[in-house]
Length: 230
Figure (cartoon, rainbow, N blue to C red):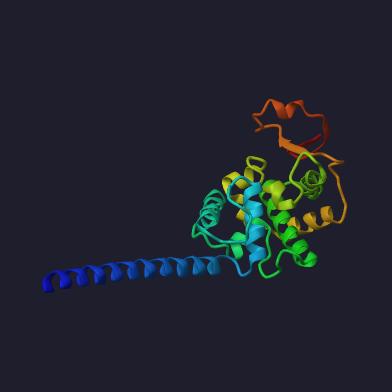
């Protein structure tokens, strides 16, 4: 009887130890998730904004809940890989800038948002039209802004620029080049309302464009190598 009691006590102790171990493992995993979230963005609002943008661009399929979990982290890595950024799953300054997000603004400050829009627009102008005339660079910026206003395209500058296959510079990584002051000035002029594209929604280089569809669009004006169309 004594031996049986000892065996029973041993089994009970082993069960309790195992259960305690499982509890500790779960607690460790929960702590890890929290720290991962803290690494990525400082506020829940920023996490939501990140998720919204990634979902709109096709990188993320999860819920927009502001929780920086594994799915969000993998979506950020996917975005970073596609855009020539360091792939670490963390939305730091460079990744945030590429998304058109200003960290620390909670996504609500109009001046911060305008500043980040200007920087992203200038990067696209520089990548797509450096070497073109100044008016040609403003026209490229204007096309992006015309798309923002159109119901056929995303309604933000970042959404338009990062729409899949919309701009060559996003696909080849040139969007991440540092823009010069001319690109910034051209972007600002377009934001201020100058539209030398006259409402165009498209532009293309006639010597390199391979899409038959783009040639079906009505030509509005030509600047340098770029044909602007609606």
